[in-house]
Length: 249
Image 1 (cartoon, one colour):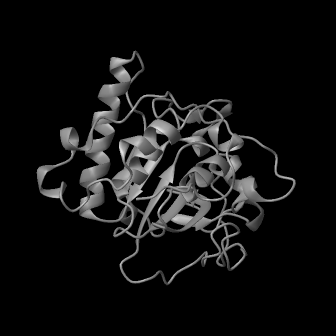
Image 2 (cartoon, one colour):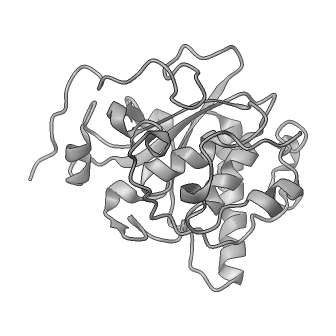
Image 3 (spheres, rainbow, N blue to C red):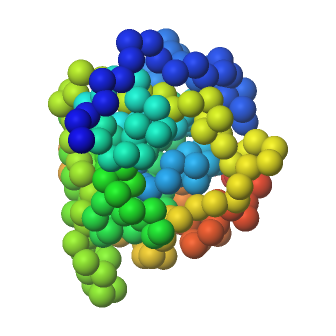
């Protein structure tokens, strides 16, 4: 079987985010940054991120990341032949939320020790991954991954299997998925499905693992009290409301 050739034009999506009512595509506001995260089926992954509090999440979108085929369809990606993984493009305002908060959610919202699967969803299209766009992101992704692996292994889990790569490895790292997948779990008639397997293990304190030179610039905005109440647990995104979490920061 050969890699599908894809198509020149992007799949059509709505202009506005179904929940946040912000634009789905750039240009993004000045100062906004982007990171692409993969943690199994993208429906639940996206909802967890758009719900983070403090208006720091500018926009989220689901799509297909880190593959070969341009503008692939869901069916093509599910064949495993396009090389993509289901992923969430996160656009955030670093003056309101730290990439460290977003990464903590990412590591804790699934089981990153599972290789090419997440729960019942099996295949390279469900692989865990982080695709970064800056040197600061690279350092924080790698350091948080190592810290989380240590925490997981201390609880009897295996090594973190997540793919960590720069977006610049690809001509285009992220392609938008079909409109019906965007903010899927918030839409009427959605199937309440999420196969993520959070292990309910906390990422160790930021000060213990973050590179010294980045500690002031990227310190977390979400306090421990937030995580005590809202840290990911199995099936949490299915049971939670669609609106962002209200939390005074």
